Length: 437
Image (cartoon, rainbow, N blue to C red; front, top):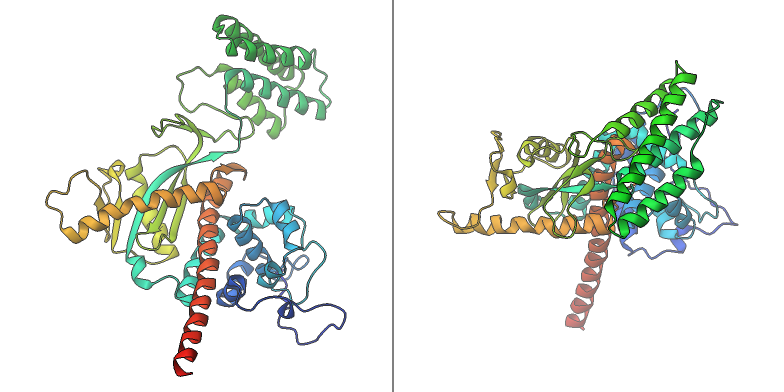
């Protein structure tokens, strides 16, 4: 059934529980932001994903939206944001509570299921609402949405650095575990020998004794092949899950150094190896993300995860379409030289950066140099808003995490600006009173 409505508007009072309005500062940024967000629209948008008359009532939409905003604003896990919610009255007020609660509002796993339910489109609605709330608070100016900077970065997955030896050992471990769950008696599982061989390979590699290290890696590959063949003999008709695991393990065993579309993680086979030419980090394992931010203000109006490691110029069309869905159609888009030859022929003027000014007008040249302002914004997304190490599963998790990271950064800026606007009004009134005194 559709989610339950918030109880904040109830007029009936409870004599034995403290009201949140008597505990919090009405000038706090979260309090002002709670009044600026259009919660009725959120109920309407996300209520469509629930059945109208089947099952038990869903969890409050306002609660789930608030928890996701707070999760990505403060860089917390699902468990941590639910635990901190119990201790913070401002978070409870944002979530639509009338009284201070002393128990966990939901189980953390409910957030995972809610993200899968709303999908990428629901995450875009959360990002869109941060822009709309900013316009209502006058923190975001309408003219700021006319010029947008677009760039790409890499969203790394939360996996170990892949080596051949580790991949062989991890694939063997997963196969042995799957066989045990299905009561498949293996001739030998190689748990003890593989552990010793992996440790020995690491020691040889650390000592630069590469021939001995390669010999250990070859033995780990042999152990994996024996387990694969043993399972295939004793289970000729495996279920879909075991068949998928066997396919991944076989690809890991057979892939060579210079092969394309390699598998770098058993539990995340869609991870890609991307090289962006960084001196401190040559290879990154995850997916490419296209981000769009306003040239003035740095408000994020788009974030799209892209799989297959596409050329930057080929991602421009989809990035502009996402900006139109979330905010509005920009008049000018500024990109770096990696977008040369993009081939975009839409209604938006695309300006590719260049090293020298040449015949570029002075006013346009200033905006082109302003394109670099998106770089520190990407740094904040990674360091403070959970884009650095994506823990959500699969390609859907990549797309959702990228969008919610941008929403969390916008939400963080809105909280700070809401407090600053109130402080400016307060000091303005003080100056006005002193002038008339």
